[in-house]
Image (cartoon, rainbow, N blue to C red; front, side, top):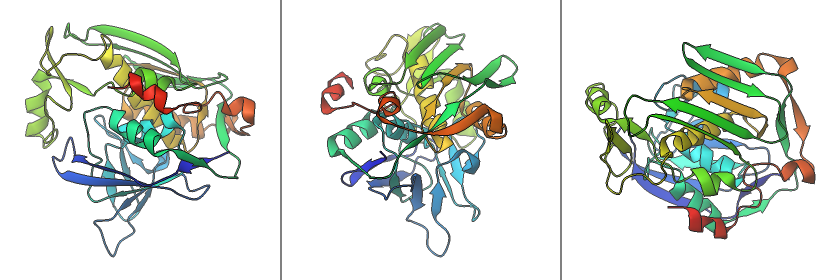
Length: 306
């Protein structure tokens, strides 16, 4: 069955790229609503944005939604990952600015708020997207692919010249609350050399050492160091889960990312839905539902979250 939030959950923070303060309110929603953002700071214009792949504007640094009226909301990926990873299928998200707050650079605050607030079930059946055959996109050394599997699995590998990151690889089956325990507290990261360049281009204006892991060679500049030795690849997996949730339903398949990012994952979804033979909707009975991200998550899982 589909789920939604049991209660209203509120967050305050600052946008990573805009540097603007933002208030975010997650609200329960009826069955078959999906995930919908509303720009409550705008009047006299269509302020609703469906969080689906066909409303995404390609961007290398974040995931950005737009609608026909030109209204935008950016950096949705950490919140989308939290919703996917806690099993929220329907939600109305009110936001009073153009960017979702970055919080501590991870999805942990969103997960904690959702889990502590609790979920409720709708009577409506839930459907998932089953991957039937391999689909992939390639850009130089970067690649993203979806292949058949009985649950959502994410495999990712990255390689950076900075020794603090280096080469990392990780694979997880996302069932049974794995996202909450293994990934949700992993923070966004960047190289110190890139910070000035981004700010010169009007980006990362709200970035600090408190809401991103900043590395310089073999040094981690953020206070307290890393939460996980492989925090960087875990965060890339977090991003992938959030971006995949713009498919509009949970995915039953294996995602493989090599040096992939937000734009490539969206291109992968475009390729998937352009090929009707590569996927189908399946109704989730109890056996299928048990393999979805978020099923079985409880407050006890929060003890593992930073």
